[in-house]
Length: 62
Image (cartoon, rainbow, N blue to C red; front, side):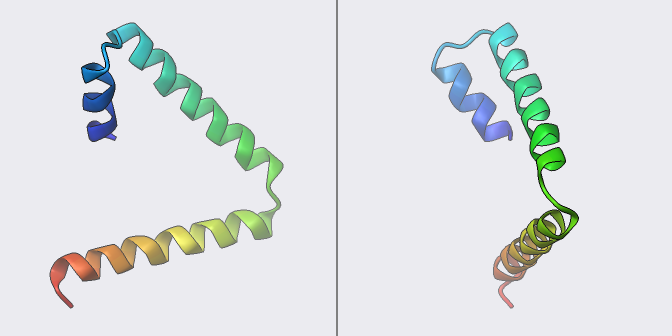
């Protein structure tokens, strides 16, 4: 997240614009959650956890 903010600041966006985009992103996630079934949401969560675990293990050198 921080890297994205730095990139946008380099692109010349103001703090107000960054705040606007951050809020819009939060709204989009809530709307998407409403449109998914429980099974779809669960599957996405499972995939996200597996990706985080794989990344952590790769970082630790295991």
